[in-house]
Image 1 (cartoon, rainbow, N blue to C red):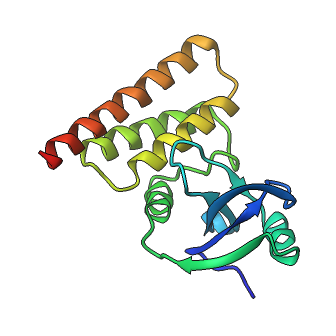
Image 2: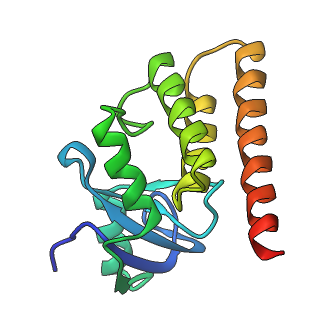
Length: 159
């Protein structure tokens, strides 16, 4: 079965395709680079390669659980493509980080469904980009500020 964007897989598969923690993954195709992003915890982003997905399917650790072409992860991918922002593992640079932070600010302001996933990708990107501890602290604080804003908005809506 060919992989298609929006397919959701579930199983006990690690990033190498061997046994790992139970996770759900959604297939994404930024810039034609097919892979999957974890979706259970928006702030803990992990990527699964096609090879790892194939190994997981072959050994029965991974199965197709559904399809969601409007999932917030895909909305984030589309927003990133419009802004020419690459996936964190496809292009590691400080510019990408700054662009993602701007995207998060706007997503937080508008309470976009993908805002939490943007925060998770930023945290993953910040750990991969070679920047000093001061810059890393600034990035983490900006993400925290946006998360606080999102939580306040949601509390207001629930009231």
